[in-house]
Amino acid sequence: MSLENTSVPASFPSRGSILEIEEGREFQPKFDEHGLMPCVTQDAATREILMVGYMNAEALRLTLSTRLAHYWSRSRRKLWRKGEQSGLAQEVVALLVDDDQDTLVLQVRLTGGASCHVGYRSCFFRRFTTLGQGAGNELTFLEVAKVFDPHAVYTTDQHGQPLPPKP
Amino acid sequence: MSLENTSVPASFPSRGSILEIEEGREFQPKFDEHGLMPCVTQDAATREILMVGYMNAEALRLTLSTRLAHYWSRSRRKLWRKGEQSGLAQEVVALLVDDDQDTLVLQVRLTGGASCHVGYRSCFFRRFTTLGQGAGNELTFLEVAKVFDPHAVYTTDQHGQPLPPKP
Image (cartoon, rainbow over all chains, first blue to last red; front, side):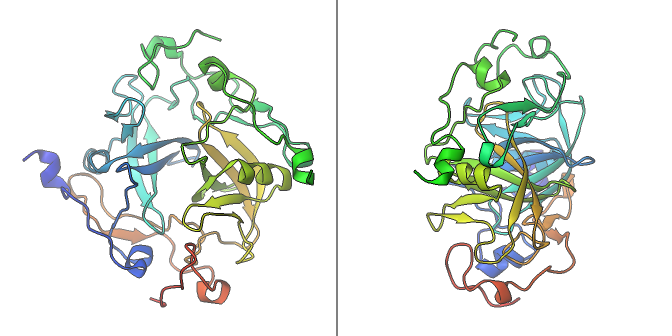
């Protein structure tokens, strides 16, 4: 039996009543039909949303026990520890769960000042330029410059494919 | 043709190259196999994460044109405007998109001081009590009291079912 299995439960509690799930003090998670839960990751200090990833039960167990963010890559179909290739890890400060316990919020401290594989601090580095009656499809950049050069950090993109050329 | 269709494009641009998607200035969204995009909704001022919902193209178009948050309910299989039953609406301040353009962040101003159908300000009102080697399944409440009584606001829960009894 591995250390992870002795430190956190090997399986999570099963689902109880709606009242237990929505207002109880026990974690009774619902993984989707692919065995995954979406996880919103935000900077613990600034509350900036950095990324949205997915966790299976194993990624969640490892995140809880090691206090380092682990995710399931849907495109590469493998477990990954954030930063294992780039060195840009996420140290866990808190893990929150929503009312119906099918979604997580991970509050983290970045070890490398950035989280997005494109080179920006947050994956959400663009917003719609206009809203309301005049809304179009134009995006405005929120970050003026990249924090790091992805070509210096990664050999492949997050899907395991070669990096696109520099813009 | 309705007002919404004249104010925002009836359909969104199709996907281009990885470089266009990840570093371009045009919205080129990817909806999943159910025609949905996850949307993380946060308080525009405090950056608190309030909820995670899902939008289809119509919900996204209505959110952009009316500046009021609209979602697709996966359990009720219908479009809904946040607050249409409870009065607790979300006014849109900004809409962000991530690197590969399959996830949204909606920054909002709450009209009623709360967002969660259970009665709390945020749906993420609980966190894991302990992390690391001693991590268990116990949750700690982050909000000490409900903002509103759901029995005074809703007749059914978010799945269209009768509300559970008060705890």
